[in-house]
Image (cartoon, one colour):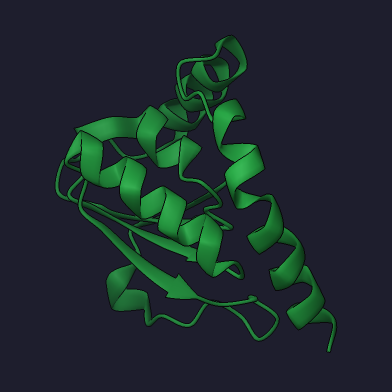
Length: 116
């Protein structure tokens, strides 16, 4: 199955990819600024990150929102995202998903969806 190969690929790259996950890098500052312009300014929202990878985007968004839900096909990438989110005290729930059949959440959990 293709999704298994994709998962294995990103699992292998998780540790090699992590040194490049700098949420303070110039391009991430631009991306997060543009996303923040489009997200509601209401606190207490639940943000879903499709393809969370190492969590760079949610770290750039920081503690502005109540919680983050990260979906990814790679367990290793999600483990990296969780470790990084814990350092910053972010409330992060992770769900393994290849998104082939849609987002495995009900609408009641989604206030905004981001992806990078």
